Length: 262
Ligand SMILES: C[S@@+](CC[C@H](N)C(=O)[O-])C[C@H]1O[C@@H](n2cnc3c(N)ncnc32)[C@H](O)[C@@H]1O
Image (cartoon, protein in one colour):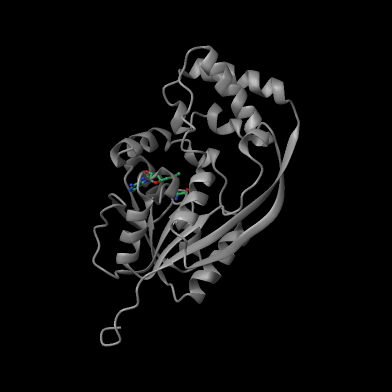
């Protein structure tokens, strides 16, 4: 999907984005900060900075962070949170000279890109250490067996019955796309940031749909969505699901400069 269309979708969901996505856990950000520092990183360009969900905690840990995003709505939210250096633009054409930053970061952006390889390469061009991305690297149970998907599937079933288009899952959910990319373009390093068992209510995945923060259902009228979400809530009740949350930092290193100019 062209960048301007993705940006238009994120403009729409920017108002409710933070209320429907978990912040990174403090221990995960601490481990991220430690890993970046060990790699010699002090300045970071975050491509797809969004509302500053990652940029803000990195600023608080002393990094110099510049955020780039195609969506002005998301950038406005990041600005309101005090992220000072923000640029509107495309990850495919970064408006910065070669090696302008120590590192380039991508968090929950790779799955949105038609050609992530190009953005990773642009990130390497403008950074001295390389492109870093937080990814979910481990294959879990197939989606159809995952209880987390049950509530969402009920919503999509009801929407389909009422004649509304349901998300095209042919590209797979975000973490599956990320995993494919790790195979297609293996990173130079992969450091585990989080690996723990989490138990959540099965209604949790419905929050994003109920608050209309999913790009896939923006065209569904609010009253139809409310009805479908209510039916899904009733069906899953107060059951919980348990899964392994694994987040890792992948690095595609920049080429070192020849000795004469390094
Ligand atoms: C799912 S949000 C993630 C935001 C933030 N990194 C986080 O983890 O909360 C994806 C962001 O990437 C931006 N984005 C998607 N494709 C982009 C592109 N080609 N160039 C610049 N920004 C892009 C969207 O506008 C959106 O703000």
